[in-house]
Amino acid sequence: MAFSTADVIPLTQARSTLSELVEQVKAGAEKIITKNGESYVALIDSARLDYYHQLERERVHLLLIDEASQGLDDVAAGKVKDARSALTALKNRRAAKAGN
Image (cartoon, rainbow, N blue to C red; front, side, top):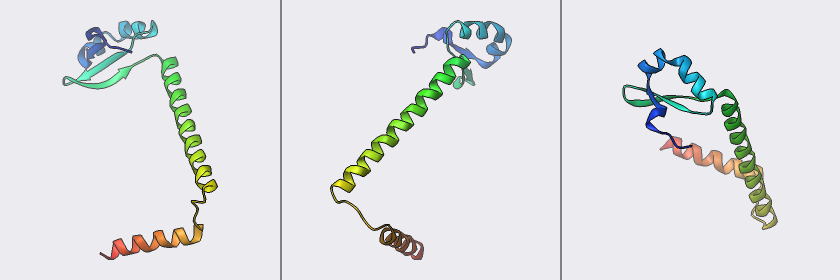
């Protein structure tokens, strides 16, 4: 969503016009509240925030599916290591770094 200059509100102004801003947000606008001239917080509808969180969860799930798929491809290609030896090698590397 693109923001216009009307969507960027200084905190002092937001304090005095909060009811009006809330009505604009409920009508579909998103507001950026600034403090000392810099972006500080956003004012968005709670349903839209829930939707954004749902999208983020879906994105995380897609990333996990991609990683699982890559892992299965690695197994099919024989790119595997014994877990015990891999952990031992990792511990040895960490110990060597700590010793330096």
